[in-house]
Structures are given as structure tokens and as C-alpha cells.
Image (cartoon, rainbow, N blue to C red; front, side, top):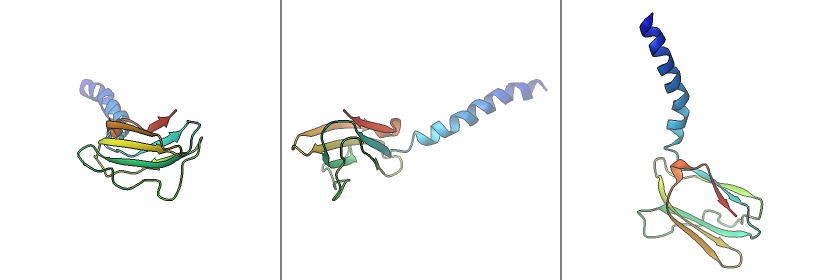
Length: 107
């Protein structure tokens, strides 16, 4: 009976932590445009890549107040992000651990 009582809290802790552990390897995230400018392009590539790759918005734009989800390969956690606004201004962030975030806010 003593082992059961000691094991139960540990089991509960592990069960509660399981979703967080599973999520921590998911590099996908949501971009929220909280700025006053339209976003014309979003690039996300592995921090190990030399190029930005394709524009994740394609023919679409991300208007103020809108959000979009960026899907990335499982366990590709360290990424570079480049956002290009309608006025041509660009915002770049290097080596973002996207496995540790669910939202990336543009203010």
C-alpha cells in the first residue's frame, strides 16, 4: 500500500506533463499580426539553412488583427523568421526556438 501511495502522485505528475512534453517538440506556431501594417511575406527556415525558402503566405497577406499558422517539420525547433511588411520594412529574428512558443506576435 505504501508503494501505491508513493507511485500515484508520480504517475499523476507524469500524466499531467505528457501533453507539455509532446508539445515541446512541435515547432509549428501561430503568427498574430497585432501591428497596424499588413504583412506581405513570412519566411521561416531552419537556423541551419542559408536561404529563407518560400514565402509562407504565398499569394495571401496578413492584415492587421489576423493570424496564420506556420507548420514546420517535427523537431525542427531552431528557426529563423523574416517578416516583410507592405511598406517594405523587414523584421528578422534568428535562432528562435519555435518548439517553446505557440504564438509569435507582431506588435
